[in-house]
Length: 436
Ligand SMILES: Cc1ncc(COP(=O)(O)O)c(C=O)c1O
Image (cartoon, rainbow, N blue to C red; front, side, top):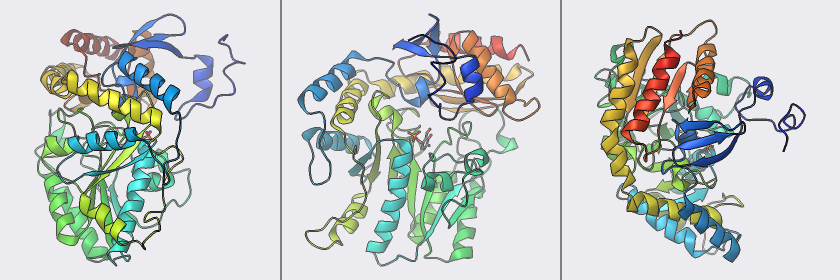
């Protein structure tokens, strides 16, 4: 295909400045391992694992083969009262990675669908317990829980909400935990656990049995990497347990090794009732999301239903799609065989040091990070986000793909990255940041 303003006009890119993109297109035509190749033949190092998806590196032949074989054998089956073995096998393998008790897995096609599924599971669970008065949901300022209406209502990023009407009613937002006292501090900040008391105040405000669930990204990723302060998640857990509120960890970014364990729940030693996941579940090779729930939630909903009738009126045409399950199984096998979660953990300290070394640059406002995830925030120039977008362009010109949100560069290398890849990412960032 020829690349010009006419051939690029009709595709409306999501979360993009379409006018700029179409003036100055950036298309990828190939990928392998740590690299992309652009349509104009440039080799681009992937510093954000695609979009936090491609933890095992790009174009893994094992995944391509598994998906191809699956599509030649069984391309589709409805998952409504029908299924295929791969769906059960993948559920078993995901359940083996989640914290003990979170043993039942509902499949969907994205992180956004996982969130809206989890919202419905929370309501259905309380209804099944005769507590349907629990109509409130709690999330956080600056949260990102995807883009469906439920997830947008939970979201705390203003730009993602303001154009879309009244959204879902009954959502309360805890304050975020991005505090000046923790600026430029690696890992979990010392200050801010007391912000969890906001949840206690909401309980007092709306009533002890009115909140259905609290949604928390263990590390808020898309907003620019906010690592929880020490003790914060524990306190949220305690309050949820005390008042019968379900705790949902949105691990769409953290899940599958990004924090050095399978899930951030394990890295931080706090077990939620529900985990949402997507992205690295299939290494990004097929769209897939999933919701892992505690057995008691599954049993409560399933056993409360009328005999011979569905218990949960929710699901997608492509839930547990055979090709996505095949990609998921092949991906988890790579993670196991190559011990990639361990590799991620082993590289973390070196990576975090390399990122925090950038703090001497005058334009750097803050650096935050944990595991193989870091946010490098630059001082804004003019409208917030302008400099971040400019930085993304400068990095691309230097052969580095990095996702930015507003004025934060979100660095999240694939787990196959070497120290030398980390050095290149850090040096390229330094070189670009020096221009401000
Ligand atoms: C924490 C979190 N939840 C949900 C989503 C939405 O996932 P998707 O884009 O697959 O719908 C994302 C995407 O980045 C995310 O980071």
